[in-house]
Image (tube, rainbow, N blue to C red; front, top):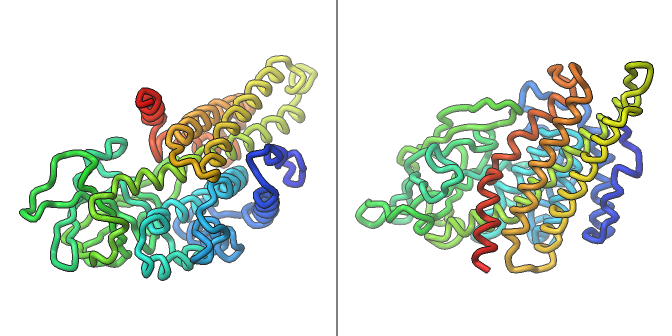
Length: 396
């Protein structure tokens, strides 16, 4: 893969971006080429910690927080997040993960944290000194957030958390967890099932009653865990936003970062296309290059068009939010759905072109094939994105 070709950043000439975004992409691309070639994917915990520190020291995590707390922009800039994730994913999936979780995990603090919490934590997030996690999913409440059962019982100046969270990225290495729970009534009974009555609390790692119940291994390794809360006392001062507004806070956070998931898919797809083009021009069979076959040329046409279609939806969603649109839920869902599905198809075709080399463990294409699969599920599976889009259309 040619890390110096200007064509690698040509898509940033689209009018969705300004010169600041273009400069950021060029800087991060050059930094990634220099620092991400030797990432150790065998010890993912240590690698993620090291990547967070490195990204913080280089100043790139400043795009995960607002300027008031050491960030790069007055407010979270969706296009900067998109640029960072697409660039990092093109180089290394674990580096993209490390960056993304700093943003997603601290998003509720940025949006709704008390000033004291923001001042304490967000500068450390930006410097890579504090690793964050977003704890929403449960064993019986993944896509169906309304089924949440992890609870918070009022106890004076504290609440007491009981229940479990699962599929929590950065679980086991995070310093703080943004935990979404269902508030119990004064009598200890939960309110009716639904999205009302949910709140969010910041829980520090090491808080008594918080246990890492299980480390979860997945096909594209990254820190992932099941959390258990057993009479875990948390000060009410660590609530994020108003009581009962947890669902809205979770959705606001996901609306910001959903377009960045699409951007990560773009990065994976662009890398797969790069690798396939290079391979096709070098691989010879039947006395000609693989690239000389019309079937190969047609495949490249499909792959390039799929990437560009996804890119336009992704950049539109980020641009609309940065332009002050009150709500971009539909556009973010479209971007996430199309980019992840198209990237899966692009990477699959790239793997097919590589033949047996594509399924060899440790190859770039094999790694991309594993990386992309999870993106079609987390932060809202493709099927959920379809529902979001359809319901939004019907609501007028």
